[in-house]
Structure formats: C-alpha cells, structure tokens
Figure 1 (tube, one colour):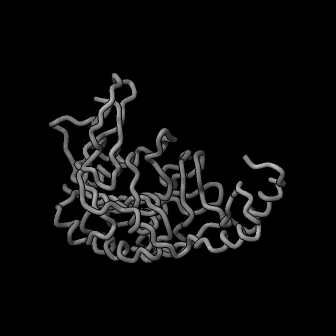
Figure 2: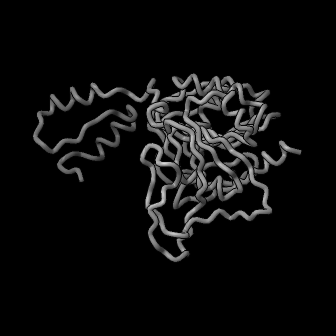
Length: 293
C-alpha cells in the first residue's frame, strides 16, 4: 500500500514518459540515495536473460494438466528430474494426460528460454511426448532427437541479444513444424528477418483483447511482455500477420505463408485463464500431423 503521494499524478507521469525503474523503501533511506540506486538498475533493453534462467540440462516432461475434480492427496514426486529445483508438490492422481495408447503421440522438443510449466502440461494434454532442452541447444542437436515439432518458449529480457536462438531457429525453419509463444514469438520474428522494439509500457495481466484476423473473432488474453515484433519489418511475401492487439494495434501473432511455423505474443496457456486461445495447441498438433502426410 502506498499513501501520502498523488497517485493520479504518478499515473499521468508514467503515461507520458513510459515505464520507469524505481525503488520502494520503508527503512528511512534518504531519497537521494534511493534515486541513485534506481538509476543504477540496468534497463531491460539489451538484457539477455534467457541463458540465466534456462534449464542446465535436457529432461523429459510427462505430466498433463491438473484435474481439480480428482480425489486430492499429496505426492512429493517431482514433475521431472530434479533439474533446477523445480519439483513441486501436487495432488496425487490429479494429473490428466487425455491420451490413450491408440492415440497418435507427437514428439516435441521444447526450447526452455524460461518456460512455464502449464505450457508443458498442455503439450502433454495434446498427445505430445515432450523433451525440454536448454536455450543454447544447437539446431543440429535438436534435429538429432527426431522431433515431430519444435516449441519455442516464453522467457524474460530483450529478444535481440539472443542471437544464438535466432540462428538456431533459422536452421530449423522448414525442417520441422515450429510453434512459439511470447519470447518465442519475438525470436521467430527476428529469425524471419523482422525487428523488435521495446513497448512504452508493456502488456501485463489478463483481459487484453486480441483480434484473430483469420477468423475475425476476438480473444481475451493474458499477457506479460515488454517487447514486440514490428509487423512492418517482416517480409510480407513470406509472413502473414494473424493476430493484432485491439488496445494499441501491436502485433500479437503471425505465421509463415508456406512453411510450418506460427507464433503468438500472448499466453494461450494462461492458468486459470482466459482460455480463449487454447485452440493453438491443437493447431500445433494438426500442423505436425500434416507434416507427416
């Protein structure tokens, strides 16, 4: 809680100048010192953070979504090998994979640039056998795993310094179906010849309206990003814009016109929602099935 300041004036100031670095302190530190500390905080532009948050080794993910209607117990079983101390306690028998032995299973390699677990759960729900690899894994090593598709995850920081990922995506395009979310979307834009830029405020939280230009339907989405793909920088002969933000008309999605690649800026996996864009996971599996025909 903040009091004794003009919050409306603060909001108007931020609307004018954009998001700022700041510090909130309650220990009596002099204001001049706090200002100096805030100014010393690095700006997000130019920050390559994916390599800091990624898994340090490859692992398989097998858990589907949590079914809250199931009997609840507690299991200490890890979600995967105890990589990066990510194991969590979950309801016993509460995970559902929605798969049967006679359903087709798609082998997906997921790049971890800071991946959210619910993305992995939804891939499993959509009949995928998922292997997660570190952010700097080469395209050659990924192809050696013989994937049916490659997923490019969300993650923190500025996409432009992640040049190793852009190079790997370029080496994968056309060889295997690709689906990207958030940072993965921005990296796709760079790999396809586009540019990214820092938003004045960023998009955060739920209830962001996005128009699907392919269906003319509006999707209510969850978002959390500070950078965006410049749609005018993309080669229109190769790339089609598929989604647009109705608040500021920035790019929210694209697909390659002839190769199996698509991506979105927002979070279709958002839990507990909105769930308007969950269909994109089915679109990915359909793309993998089409690639094998």
